[in-house]
Image 1 (cartoon, rainbow, N blue to C red):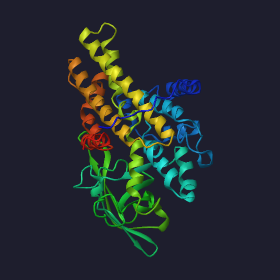
Image 2: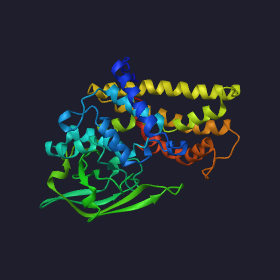
Image 3: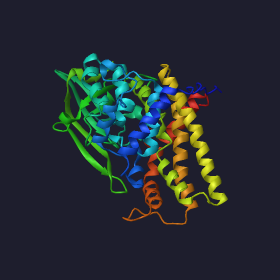
Length: 388
């Protein structure tokens, strides 16, 4: 069995901690009227105006080169902004995917024209992305994708269907994963490519976005039907046939951040506030255990940020952070339900803890699905450790 190595988390950085103070001051002003129920949306909360304010502060695309609208700050400084935003329940959803994974993907694999056209808009908080990966009947098996892009005169003709595509109804761009060639014998990952799709054009011809309403009645997910969608030659992202390598690198950004263990943080805050300093010993022990798990995961997650900064490939470590983080997030909901003798309710006038608990009871099951199912994560971990 191979050893699973994490680098040492970044040391204390006075510049990053000064930045933390600035972020908290910003949040104190911008979040003063946001209810705990709204904060519980975490990084799913969508507010384009808030994203533009973050862009004005230089808090999106922080580590990117300045020539693309970035600020050439460190991975630790970026991490400080991320965890403060998530801990406060800030509505960062408009730019989240673009900043977390799509922008780094374009920065690494895109053409100079793609970088110059799109990255400054992301950094300004003015451009949103969705990810066209999952497909019907394939679950989390991305290698089973059947959406196909065929070379034709003038570009690529795309046909297929994507599902569970968060934000496709409002995103400016999609990074689309599809087949451009055949799988080779013994390599089912071959023959895949990624494309940069202008959604404002695609939704007007060749692409139909249909809402998927979740059990809370909310519209985040979509089914995206693609029929004879013509993409220009320059829509190809990176090298033809290199899609699998590109997407696995992209997923390391998606799976390792503090969003993978802070989605239920507002619930923990409200539970502590409601239980108060005289909480029963049983409750204090449970809250302490959840807090210690958050601290451990934060250490692991910051370590992965350091690996990404160093140009390493932390796909295995990122899968571990995501799996353990999802377990913690879902366990937090179960533990708090046992600690408070109330029925969750999102009705108007419900106490904050009750409303937040109701929201997370309905949404927490999805935490171990988004970004790759728990089974997929554990398969990656097992292979990386030489266990399968």
